Length: 130
Image (tube, rainbow, N blue to C red; front, side, top):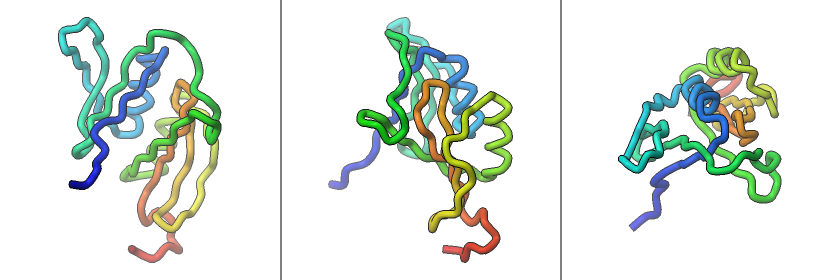
């Protein structure tokens, strides 16, 4: 048996802003309620369940690359279009456009300060197809 990622659950004190942020990434979050009164937004990306839930306390995520921080990454169809959508929401860019061996990326902060890598395969014209 191989270990697989089952879920990515994000708690936020800014539910509406976080849902808008992840939707701008192309994560098609929908309202979900399991009958326990904790209405949240969720979807499945492949075999991974992604959920954004209201936090029981306010606060910011630890700084990018700081102890206790997380770093999620998403492939998007268009890095440029996604970055336009995210900056329209006032998203902070932590690392501007960078060519990498797997494609191109930017790193942005979600509304709670979590670093999120936004990737596009074969985005840079000088990259060979893999």
